[in-house]
Amino acid sequence: MAKLPQMADTDLDAVISFLRSDHPLVAADPTPDVPSQPSLLTKLLCQVAWKPFPLPTKEILRPTGEDPVALGKYLAINLDCFSCHSADFKTNNYLEPESSPGYFAGGNQPLDHQGRVMNTPNLTPDKATGIGNWTEAQFIRAVKYGEKEGETALVFPMIPYVQLTDEEVGAIFRYLQTIPAIEQQVERSVYD
Ligand code: HEC
Image (tube, rainbow, N blue to C red; front, side, top):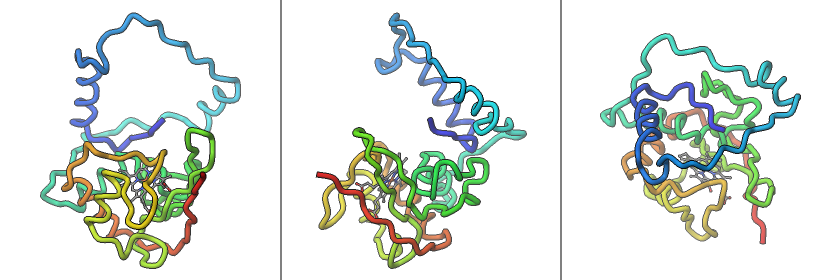
């Protein structure tokens, strides 16, 4: 479950409006919910490790496209890119993402549909181990369509972000070029 305490008020309003709409994806459905049955440990962790975040004290604004780096930062955080692409879900700092250990240097290990570890790549501007030598066009193709030159397509849990515009993905790229480069080689997880 994504944790998005930095999401702008207008985006959150839009999500709620969509969920309450008659759109076929979310239209009312009489199928009863399957009640969740958290274990005692989960309940305990909800009180300790996964405590709710403090409520925001002022409106959170959504950056406009006029400042691509600010927009890119907003998207890189609120589309949860940082969460998978930093060191570890357990050490991510969701209130101050940039203070997370290994911010965007990859090495986190989400699982694929078969439960196999999928190492996340380093997206910092390090030239040898990150995306310091990538062009904006290469980045857009990878993020929107999963395409990587000379390699097999990117696979789950990296999903193709086809709904994003080139300007939005380009803004994420521009932001990532401004963050501290971290040298960390991450091997790609490849299974037959
Ligand atoms: C659920 C975890 C997850 C999220 C969220 C996620 N990624 Fe990824 N991403 C991955 C994994 C895992 C890979 C490697 C996939 C593979 O090896 O086929 C990857 C690969 C990539 C690559 C290829 C880099 C390379 O060196 O090969 C780029 C670029 C990328 N992600 C950008 C993004 C951006 C931008 C976002 C947010 C819009 C994002 N990712 C969100 C897990 C994630």
